[in-house]
Length: 166
Image (cartoon, rainbow, N blue to C red; front, top):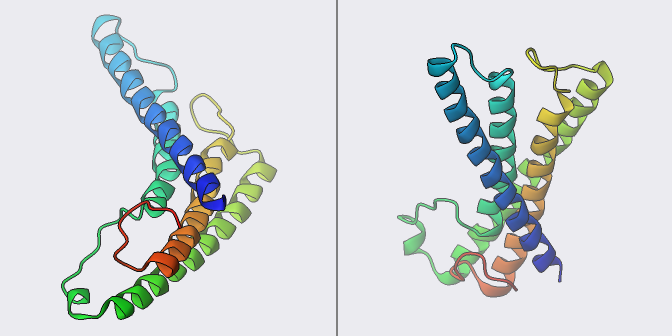
């Protein structure tokens, strides 16, 4: 049940990330055409592109954790038994949980400061909290996805493949 919720959330955010990067590409294309034909570009282009990239990057990070799709170097682990590989995989997933949780906590603290200051972007005055929202959500969901991957690894072993549910 929890695994399904994490996976559905991660999938939804990955699709949202895809939409944001597509929007950034579209706005960039429109900006280029406008600059060449009308002599001026899209107002706030830099702000909009940066915001879209922030959402794309941080909302899709958890996808890699949930699908257990990060690059793995197996030169050394091929020499170990399945049991040792499972223990190592579990250890690294737990390290990922801690690192992502610490980063999410730190990002949340920074986001609160930014919101309190009322900072806005330079060109079109987008509240900076909108830039921090995907950072906090993406890192927190990455911690949950890593925890789920640890649970799957514990139940099924290190060689169980990517994205399988326990």
